[in-house]
Image (cartoon, rainbow, N blue to C red; front, side, top):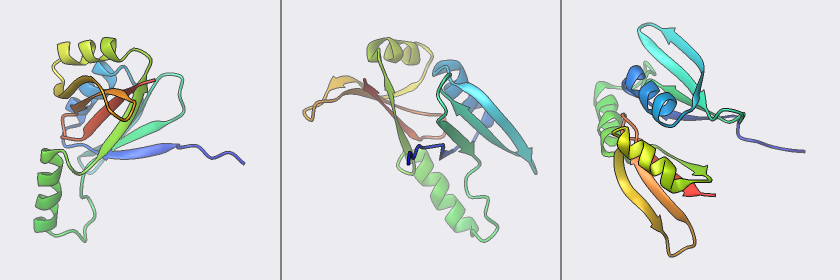
Length: 134
């Protein structure tokens, strides 16, 4: 039996800014764009890879209070609510492209003590995007 990751979910606060980051800067393909009641769910992923990220409006559950919604939005803005780690075969080239494109750099390419070379960015919603050299 094989198990794979089909989708992972990250919140977004601005669908167009999210597309600019994931599609235009990272080079992911847009796989689905669903609107409902003025909100948008975007499914993006690396070309040729079945794994997808669903970028969703945060806190749309009607049972969430306004105070809870504000707490979630504040955590997103700080970059501590959600994260994903990606991998690339050319970390330095990806870093240069992301930096030139105006991505919010958290960490430049670094050789970590635990054996990984990586860098990190925040997407427009504040989600931490860490990238490892494969």
